[in-house]
Image (cartoon, rainbow, N blue to C red):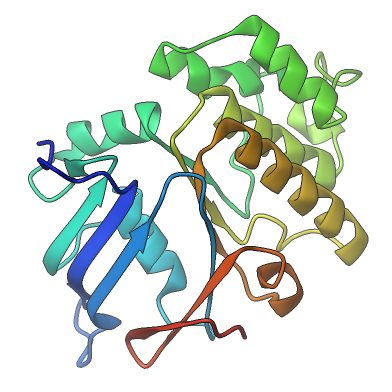
Length: 228
């Protein structure tokens, strides 16, 4: 349900999450705000809960307590179908493992999310393919591409649906440093042009330093301005 008077793109309030059978909370009473157009890097040690926090924001998991709101929509009362609708229309997720559909061509993979959200724009899809260096690969299948090219397809697929909030979970973690830098720069440039917000989970201090804001997740709390 919409939250009246909430103009922030993302708002977490006193969120607590505990893994099943765990004795301590992954994070406790965490709060966070993100404005439209703001880019945030979320860093922390392995197992600190970065991906879990991202999954809560994207409606892929639910908090034990507290509230998560995206674009004024409170995720707490949403069922699985409601959270899936949020990901189709408002939130785009870019995963480290690409998650492309092997049986579809590059062009069809790029269009997939946009078609689900009812926002397929052939001109926008072509623009993204060209900007991401994919225009000569549109008829290929994912297995015919390098890892860097596959991640570019995953980025294009997410941005083709014009989400208001982009969540990127180690999107360059499977790439060599040079390829990672190129893909990262393209992703940030394209997200910035749409005015969407970005939350990036990364282990890389080098990449985190390139965003306007950094948060470090450690000992169950968020600390402003720290990197790995």
